[in-house]
Length: 455
Ligand code: GDL
Image (cartoon, rainbow, N blue to C red; front, side, top):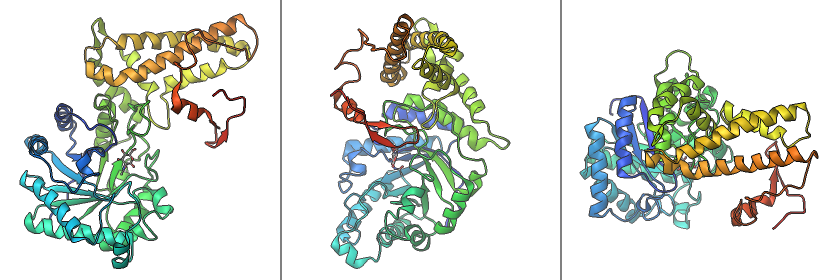
């Protein structure tokens, strides 16, 4: 039995979409060192050999890339975890599939890798007929394969650590019995006690994670879970990114988990605040104020916003960040902008006029900022922002035109057309058309959109 692990803190490259570049990874490792984070987990979902063709061995050039990552982590004394996701089509009782996983692990062991993760997230929760006749449940099948792998790898290399991502990896999935009844408690009993188990909270993207929920889970798993936090992941809604603070997790949670790892925005340059605030949360001993953490991180991020005509200001950066804050929450300045814009949809009362004035000032500030950002010297940062700020500027421009129209037409719901926002080029395409079929209501429910609906 190895010594218990130190508290794990770090970053998971575990999103869907284009993996990070090697240069971005090296930058990440340097940032992690400065922030006191200790672990990097390699598991990009769309690296073909991570999931889709997991049976194939790495080519020499792929080995070269992985070896570079491992060396870079070693040089900075960062823990490197290599993740493999065979769950899409693995046959749990099949000897040749087991050998394939072993061969892949062996390739990595040769490179110096000592930490492995086996991932069973986002897979069909069914076994084929042979597996179903051999194992009494899905959880038993996964435990069998993983324990066997663990024992074998430990024999080869006694310092190896193994991490495991369950099929139900959040509260909602466990409640709906994804993976079968008692999946988590079977895991707790059957999975070797030294194997770490990932968990994302009550949801895939968890707004809050409570101490009680983790206590319950700990009992079932018979160990502390390891938090795989998707709070800042944006692979599921790429029109957005999240640069708000790490929040919604009480400080006490740190006592109840074996570590916290963030699976963040796909766009590497946009993760500055997520990394900084998570690290600040992990280092905090006294009270933790996420907004303060955010403002402090913004101040540190500001030097990256040098443009060809000087730097943008901290206030401007905060305004921008508030527009791309968190999945469940816009920042206070964006919220204020929205509230004023919403008032503009109503009748022209005294409040309307005030909202119009405030909105106009904020919108023109923000539009100007979006224009200035096109001149950022850090082009990677600009490219990461550009689609999002283009869209923001477009919507602000549209609302400004509507506002001007309303000021000239004192009717609550005028028939407005914008000469710059045409059918086809503005909010067009099949995705937008499909979206318009259903209207979302404030309670979260959907209803078919009232006709007339333009096609
Ligand atoms: C998931 C995936 C993750 C993805 C995230 C956000 C886990 C364990 N798996 O379900 O790869 O990036 O959602 O979309 O979180």
